[in-house]
Image (cartoon, rainbow, N blue to C red; front, side, top):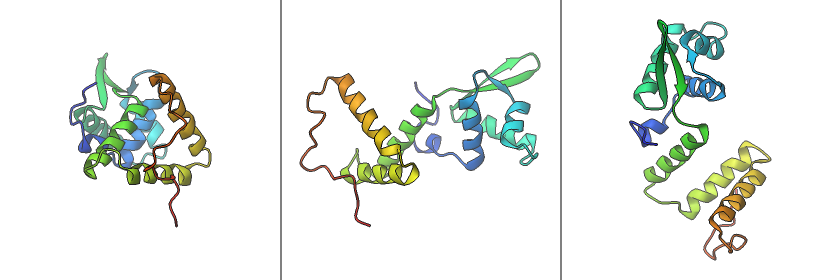
Amino acid sequence: MTIRGEGRRAAELGPLEAAVMDTLWKATDALAVETVHARVAPKGRPVRNTVQSTLERLVRKGLVRRTKQGRAYHYAARIERRDWFAGAVGALADALRSRPSPDLLAGFVDFAERTDPEALETLRRLVHERLGERGDDARDAAPADAPSGRRKR
């Protein structure tokens, strides 16, 4: 899927944009502004107009689609959470002017480990599954120049 504004700008989300996207990713149907506002701002802050402006900004970034239902617009994510994360990681690699370098991958593993104790096992399973999908017979062997995934602290 081609996303308008694809690349670094599309990958950047402010805190409110991230909260709105999270709400849309969890939804099974397109949501009205009022529903999104109630879910991201249960105490009324930020105000409804700020949430609507954020939704419109996400539409311009190509991350959200807007459809008219009756007299109101409803909003839904145009991209799956997983695809957004893949784009964000790719944008980071582009910003570092590398295609995945051992340091970038080791940094990702370190981040995963700090974020969630079970993340490393999940990451191992996902890599194993992907290599299996590709029919890679050498999926258990690591290249000689690959970092251990563990950095000295």
